[in-house]
Image (tube, rainbow over all chains, first blue to last red; front, side, top):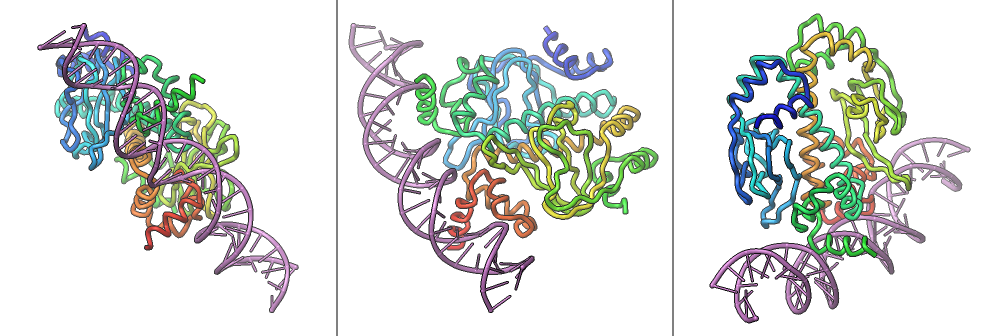
Amino acid sequence: MNSALVRALHMLTHLPPEEESKLLSITHVVAINKGEPFIREGTVPQKFAFVNRGLFRYYYSNEKGTEFTKGFFAENSFIVSYTAMSKQLPSHYSIEALEDAEIMVIDYAEWLKLFRAHPCWTKFLLSLIEKGYMKKEARERELLILNASERYRIFLRDYPQLEHRVKQHQIASYLGITPVALSRIRKEMTL
Amino acid sequence: MNSALVRALHMLTHLPPEEESKLLSITHVVAINKGEPFIREGTVPQKFAFVNRGLFRYYYSNEKGTEFTKGFFAENSFIVSYTAMSKQLPSHYSIEALEDAEIMVIDYAEWLKLFRAHPCWTKFLLSLIEKGYMKKEARERELLILNASERYRIFLRDYPQLEHRVKQHQIASYLGITPVALSRIRKEMTL
DNA sequence: TACTGTCATTAACATAGGTTAATGCAATTA
DNA sequence: TAATTGCATTAACCTATGTTAATGACAGTA
């Protein structure tokens, strides 16, 4: 039951078994329904989680209510509004479930105790943030130098499974374009 | 002479004085002229540096030779193609001096020895990467949800000094637009 | 089966930003 | 001073993407 999280931990770094157990002891499994928020924009995050099952979307919204999808996170990912949580400031974005999901929630205050008590967690966090940094860097590059159809190609390459789990207008908002524009791009590609 | 780097280290994390000295002992001051590269796209980085004086630009270029500025780094910043260096893969971007500069270069292999020998460096690196992650996240947001003139406003707010140290076509390439478009935006703003 | 709601597609038109080329302007050098 | 060089500006035109609205295609449900 915990094996997915344990495997994910092992992928990132080595941890003493007793520290691993401590982490497991402060996680609790939570079901979250499609459409429900995990983190709400404007609130200070007090928790983060690991996804056992389901799919999540991070999104910004502007004054007009337009939503911009920052990213998708499926099974075996951590979901967290990291900057906001670590600085204890309101999150700039929301995290919501796109499918019925099961997650393992970790309370930030509990995590901090663990983190401060053993250096292995610094290494763990470094691996995690390093990975996040590399992903952000790749995304920044795409947004800076590629046009919409090139970005769509990359999306299809990087997230082949997602194309079928996610609505097109959500893919469009991830690419920074409208559903209409995505529809045009798709039409072009099949010609 | 070393004080700027030492101050920067202190801003990021606490380090034992003897570890700090070890780091200083493997840095060497290097002069680098305006227009010269520090890291060349396509090469595997074997070094990183701290900027004592001068200004640097990170940039991608595409097949057509168009350059896209990823970021600007002035005094008291570290300059590094981090992903490429830590994975020992070719860098996707170049780093060049925009002004005559003085930097403190650290050899990657030497740094790795230090890093592996004392846990304080993991904490240091976590602080550094965490900061980088937050910056990337902010930039991703700008590129995803803001139009060119909004991005220019943010540039002016975040880098007020840079407007005068950097050519307009370089600012344009940072914003992901052409110099012509930036000129139009500037004209609009003064009306 | 018919009704409803949700989303993708398409078309017509609007706009931001790209492209190319000419012009202006200031700094550097002959 | 005149000539040159390197940018920024401007104008004319082009293209990708946005906007709005109509149409189509399904899936769920009465």
